[in-house]
Amino acid sequence: MAKPSQPLLEVLCPCCEATLRIDIATGAVITHEAKAKAGPVEDLHSAVARLKKEESERDARFAKAVAAEKANKDVLNRKFDELFKKAKEDPQQGPPKRPFEFD
Image (cartoon, rainbow, N blue to C red; front, side, top):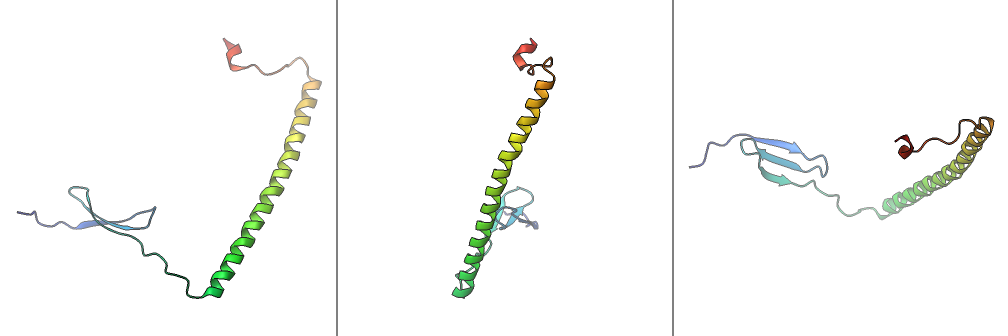
């Protein structure tokens, strides 16, 4: 004979947003309902406009990344110059010790 039915625990999956119904006693997934996917595009003009908008956003992000990379080169050069200048001012300090030199 089957045991009396206990209430099932409903959980929303954080990854795929599916609804899972889990048996509390056994911990087994009893049912799985996937999230409904969006259907095909109904308005072609709005879809094209959305794609053009996404393209312009990608171009803007790429341009920003290129500018950041160019600025990064200048920052690294400036840091190197400052450290080189500091090393020339204090030659007694010498290079930092490497981990195997501490033995």
